Length: 220
Figure 1 (cartoon, rainbow, N blue to C red):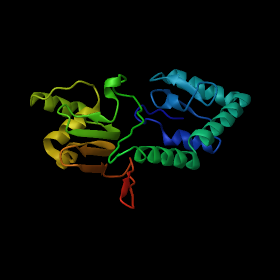
Figure 2 (figure 1 turned 60 degrees about the vertical axis):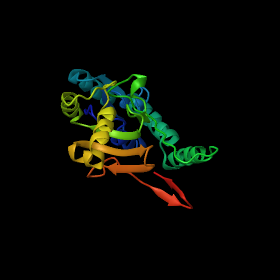
Figure 3 (figure 1 turned 180 degrees about the vertical axis):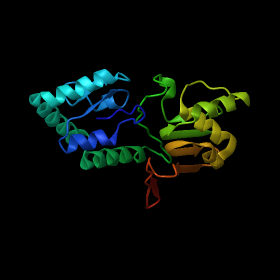
């Protein structure tokens, strides 16, 4: 049972599905990419504790339903999120990026839309002046406070995303922007002017950042 509303695509749900445990969760962005109500798990409206309890009771009392959720959940994880599948997709993406004629730098991003569902929040995101390009995974918990401070300094924003707040902070403070952040994150920012790549992760590594370098190629 997962009651959180801040997890994105939760690993705990994938792990439960992989080992054959039926899952019950709130219907929030990210979770709905894993759980289809009545098929791979049970979903309750966000914040509705009574509905969450009913879903749990239904799974406990209906063995056939539980078995269906277990089988479908395990199949979903094996087909879409196995280590072999993910490695194959990353390898294909890397080969596609570096095979472009004359390509030197490429950022790619598959977005989980939570804070701003519009296309304006898509990534990679380019700064207002066009100098910086960011690809960011995670969540900045204090982004609303940071945004308010930046607006008082005269900055304006075109989206409601923490990504744009982070990008603006980097424009103003460079790598020192990390001191302002409270959250979980893996960040890549490309400077079109100096041709430098800035990579960073949160202090605990909740959003891991891996990199590879070989024969003049660098990937992360």
